[in-house]
Image 1: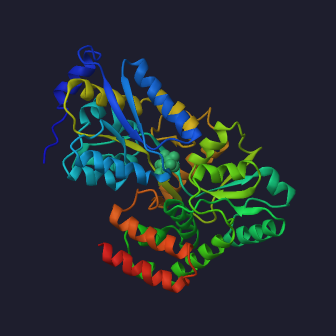
Image 2: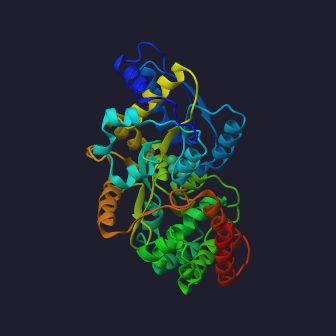
Length: 414
Ligand code: BGC
């Protein structure tokens, strides 16, 4: 295995000379193509250009990044990896183990990342003791978004228990409103599923099931109850849900066609990009139950030849963790900064809730990685779980059969 790309000395020399020698270049693979996402990634493109960089955009549409990851594998296999790639969770370590990721420790050390990133986030950015990715943000998954007018008109509060959610949904259905805006794509099914699972199992058993893959919890009555609630959710989506993109589901909440969406806070980026105001036009609340499911977007640099590209990797890494970028990007993206020293004054109430809940859950041991967004498990294992979740959602499979299949799928993936 070879992890030589930018040797500490050359990267520091490039930075020290203000990139005078090489003109930074980067081909950047990402899946940020919705309105709010595009506005966010433009912040990085602009900062890169302002610092003399030339950005070649490689967007691969598809929420959750499955299509982007397929495109990445094809590029790496053909020996032509992009310079920088949106990558996160254990996939970072998986790629590092394949010997294709660059060590960005020179930049990380020069910029003092260890002092400004929480240990929990920094841990995801390390491979065999070196820095191998740069974190952009913290997205929260377990959010429910509501249309304020629709809820008020129907005398409904944001639900704080799953029973309240079901009662609200039944009332909305009777009033001819779609209770839950949803797109039938595997990663969206998984997103709803893990929010339901966190609420019903509780943080400790969620961790046992989806981080530790503990068979007792995977096969438990609690897991049966999770699938029971998923069956109810299936009844609350409209007939045209199959294949719908997540941002179109968000638009259904915006325009009052649907009342709720369960989605990570990139949905807030979408509301904000459309000029909607939190607390007035739309409401945010964590989904019923305790805990916090986090999803940290990050970029990894692939081993490439050429001073220009390596200068591009050093510059990008530096900008991504830069204080100003972390503020402006996250104001657009709906997430909160990964850095601990960015003031949140300009952020909205949902972001303040996210930050306070993240700190409280970190202290209380209920800050948990999202399995649905690739933060908790290796690809084979999260894929095995999601296959069962989706098969259950799209059929009349019983909850007990789903639990049996879940346990088998997980056992076979190990
Ligand atoms: C990413 C977000 C992105 C969302 C929808 C998530 O997995 O972390 O940055 O906005 O997918 O594409």
